[in-house]
Amino acid sequence: MNLPAPLNLRQRYNLTVFIAIALAYCLMIGLLYKVIDNYADDYTSHYWQDYTKTFSDAVKYSVIMRSTSVSEVLTHNFAADKNVLKASVYNSQDELLATSGGNQNCKATRIGLNRPLVIESYDYWCFYAPITQATNYLGHVELIISKADLKSVFGQLLWVSGLIILIFTAFIFFVVRHFSGLFTTTLVEMAVVLKNVSQGVRGSRVTFSGAADIDMMRDVFNDMLSKIELNEQALEERVADRTNALKIALDSSQAANVYKSQIMAMVSHEMKTPLHAVVAGLQLLYEQVPQGPKHELYKEYHTKALNRANELNGYIDNMLLHGKLEANQFEVAHAVVAVKSLLQGCADKVAPLQVRNRNRLTLSGQDVSVVADAEVLRHIVNNLLSNACKFTLDGDITLSWWLEPALLVIQVGDTGCGIPDEFRARIFDAFWQVDMSLSRKYGGYGLGLAIVRQFVQQLGGDITVETNVGKGTLFTVKIPNSADRLAHPL
Image (tube, rainbow, N blue to C red):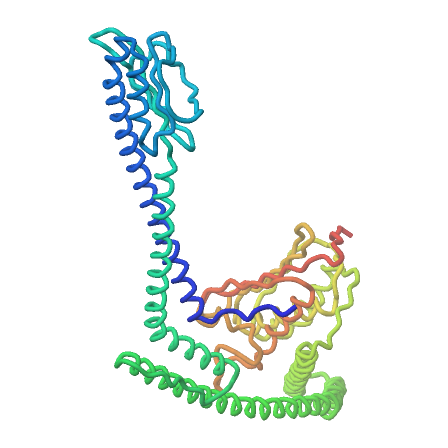
């Protein structure tokens, strides 16, 4: 089944105008017909009421004299009008004295009818008027009047009015249709052109013309389309340029990843292998240095070299570890961890750095166990303690831990230099330090806290920092108990 095509803008406008005009004129003629009908009905009713009153006055004396013949003559005279269907005269006992006309009857109680009465039906009226002499009731008269002529007049009026309305509506419609074409045609053409533009067709322009304002609208619209096409072309060129740049960046990134993998492999093998040999050699030399005051300087140099070699080894390990974390190649292995012994081991590991900067380290916490990754937890605490020892001189460092519901809380605090507020948001960025200059006071490469945050996230925990410049820093780590298993005392 083929459905009719939808109407365009001009057709919908013309149809709407036609329906509006037709409804308006139909409403107007309906109201006019109603007003005229009411007026004509009232006028006709009053006329026949007066006619009935005249009839009652005319037969009054014949009723007084009980002259039936005179009453019949008068009745025939008043019934001569073509609209009178029946005329009758009744005495005071409602006895018929004279009648003329058809057999129509009105259902009314006429005994003692001492005032005018009108009964209306669809086809006729029934008019009644009393016959009185002074205050004496002598009888009444009845006239039955046909509505046929009135209906005929109104039928002709309605037909003529409808024809006039039809002609006038058609005239108004064609006039409006003619003038509506002056602007609906422009809108339809603009809609077609905009549809072409939306489908990517370039070069579509409107060609309508007319009055000065119509021509101006055409020129402005075409200029707007030209600018849109120019902007679209410029945008396409920019997108193409950006696409090429992204392709180059992607190729560079892929090349960088390959280079990074090669660097990691080289660092892992070509640097750590000789470094291990250096550390082992220094350790052996240190053990072979004889005891005595003459050799204290040799032992001091060997100790410093060994410490620096171990620091370098730690730096390389952290770089490799950071690479694994960035590549999502690090897997967490959960197990039951004795917290106190693990943290005591971390404190022992940073003891040389603590002693070098003349710091005091205090541990406080319960002897508990949790379910976590011991190696990850060790890296977190080692890095935090190393930072605390490095940035604190002749100060106090605290390592404390306790249990909360389903959480292990670890705090590392120091009385060191602190972190300025403007840099607090960046301390967990990789390869970033407050002082990035080559002559900076504190060494390192800015990976420690970045690794700490990544490890904490690997365990599903959270790390926060509180710091004041010149007063110290406090790191708080909250680690959830894996598999919702609560920690328990040993």
